[in-house]
Amino acid sequence: MLAAHRVLAVRGNHDRWLLGDELRGLTYAHQAVDLAPATLAYLSALPATRRLATVRGDLLLGHGVGDDDMVRLRPHHTGYDLEANFALGDLLADPSLPLAAGGHTHQRMVRAFARPVGLPLVFINPGTLHPDHDSGFAVVDLERGQVAYHDLVEQAGGSLAVQAAEVEPLP
Image (cartoon, rainbow, N blue to C red; front, side):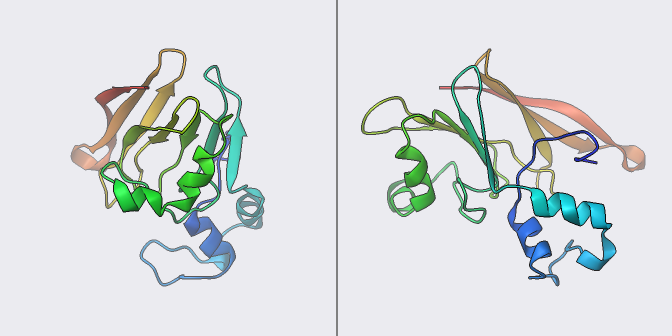
């Protein structure tokens, strides 16, 4: 479906594990033999990151933080958690990058990280569609300078409804 709608996507840890036949015993893990060859080809072609030009400067899209699909960056991380986050350090070292987006933690977040020189790095986590977490998505409006979060709420009969949640300003 992503390929059919020409969605700009990146490879995540589960895609990497599927292609490498790793950790296939996990809950919700697909087996490569159960997927169509076109699906496997699509997943194999996904990059770890995409750098996109936007009205607010370049945005780096990744699954975790930068090229590392396993790095966690949480809203409450401070001190050593940030100092030891080398993937975040790499992004902060690139003053031409004002925006980054990633997930992996499944926690919604809009957060600015100061740089020694220049503008801060704004990091956006859109949340998750994972059924075992609070499912939802984000719409990032860079012209308006905001991130609008939406919840997916299960309705009677098992259907899903979209419900507006919070709106966060971009720093």
